[in-house]
Image (cartoon, rainbow, N blue to C red):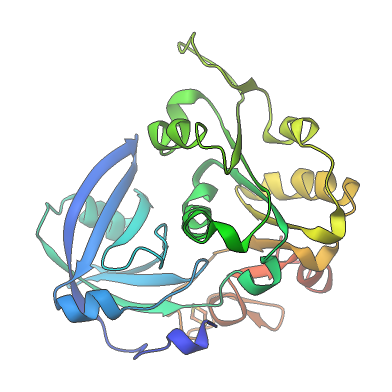
Amino acid sequence: MTASETYQNPFIPEPVRIVHQRDLIKDHRFFQIRHIDMQRAMSFQYMPGQFIMLSLPGVGEAPFCIASTPSRPGILELGIRKVGKVTEALYQKVDNDVIFMRGPYGNCFKIDQMKHKDIVMVAGGLGVMPLRSILYYVLDNRDDFDRFFFLYGARSPDMMLFKEEFLQLAKRRDIECLYAVEKVGDEKDWAHHTGMVTALFKDLPELDPLKTNAVICGPPVMYKFVIQELLKLKIPKNQIQMTLERRMKCGIGKCGHCVLENLYTCIDGPVFTYWDTLHFRELI
Ligand code: FES
């Protein structure tokens, strides 16, 4: 399925209910939302990599990547960092409050090109949010993909988003989870790597570059170093995908806020390949 096939009505905000929220770390909160209309909730279609716009009447609107997988319909999950007036107002909401949503928007990860290939997924900090969508998509369709490596780096164990969830995930046999923190801090029983996320590449087994796809999301500074590692592995440039969300306002190619060179991040992205970034150098 392509992103355009998930198109419903991109202009009209729909009411959704907050069904659950909890803090992940300071100023980062997990939200589960659901369309009020149950039929709509179950039929809402999107693909990993896409984003939605949430709005609060009288406050404003902001874009958020989707952190849940379409293979588990009914509920949408979001990880939201408190920054700006929309998120501050969102943090004041309680379970069962109604807010508004439109979307989904943007393109999605090239999942078809990843099928029956190995996947190296590299996340840094908050960048794990959009990758969580494709992470569970791959796990829910596990037979469609070959080996699956999930590399996640955070500043410290207590800055790791979804820490308990990901530590449990590491026990599965159908995914190889490699975690790194820059500083262990007070967590003396940290059993994973200490250092940068790029240091985890040495723990990967031998990969056939033509049979490998990489997916990246993290802070801007991370891309350069992660891409260097992927290029050392000789993974083709068009098999390195990254999601870059920035400066989005309308989400539908009207406001011009997200334009970089002649690309609209909200329509042409937010998922780009490393090959794309070589042609549009402002992207990263
Ligand atoms: S967010 Fe308005 S044009 Fe892309």
